[in-house]
Length: 239
Image (cartoon, rainbow, N blue to C red; front, side, top):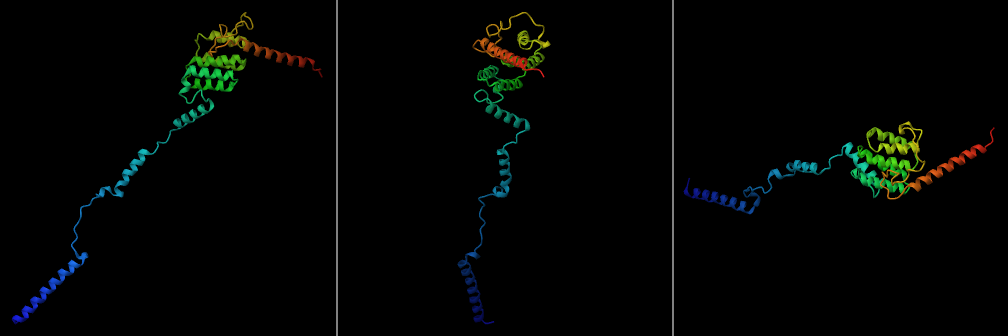
């Protein structure tokens, strides 16, 4: 092969090489790719973070209440609505002096059902506290409720069989329900000679006034009503 032909082939090969270099420089897509460091590691991707989010949600989510907790919460709401200003929760029911005072105020306002229920719920909260039962017994006596008084006195004697207050309970019981054997034999004492909180009444409701007139008025009204009923029955002609 002649030297001229070889020279032409060399020039042609060099031209092709230069053309390829220029083509790559002019086309970025053909540039060699350099792997950049990942600024967000794979462990921080959404897929990998999902378990962490779920764990956080589990911590923030409220724990379901048990039946006992739910009942306690509903009871507290009832207490707050039923006895506004007196008790707002079951914990308040454990304040014996406060509950007796609240019951006495209800009694003064002639809200007898509130007074009785307040003391009932306080007794349920602290069943071993005798002062609550005695306050309940005295209110029943002041209302001249013989049947209720007998029931409450019987329950008190069952729970506190050796209470020193039992003698007072039976004394009042003989006045309001003399036919009940639980109160013992009747004794010679004036019908109303021992009424009043100083010293005749035990004053278990911590009253600051003499209750004698209230009891006498209730008894007088009761006697007049009974007399009117008997007179009406006597005046009715027999068939």
